[in-house]
Image (cartoon, rainbow, N blue to C red; front, side, top):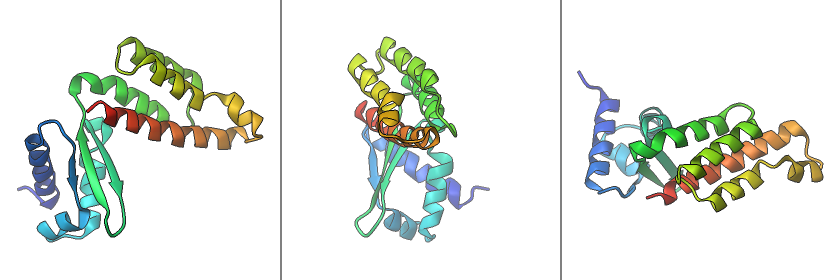
Length: 158
């Protein structure tokens, strides 16, 4: 027997199917009202059922006028992006490993060479060393910036 989480997931997937490849934009509060649940239940569904590993990218803005956008990633393009995002999300990123993924995505024409070079600049240690940032702090900062940039690039593919 399906539970509330299943119904919310099914509803969102139907919206995505009707959107013809465009992202779906919803309001967390309105969706919670529709399903008579708390907004955190919506967060749970988004985190568990609409992750990059499952082929989705979720962008949100909290607050009074907040919204949620859900993007469906093309399956053919998903695997290399998943690998790169996973590499970027590791506890501490490995710049050499990330450079290899970036090169592969550029070679496979999933991102431009220019985009690849911009992302390589983010993980270039010399910028952080020049500012006197400790390696551990630099890795955390690289991870945050790289992850945000990758998500933006992935959205641009729509």
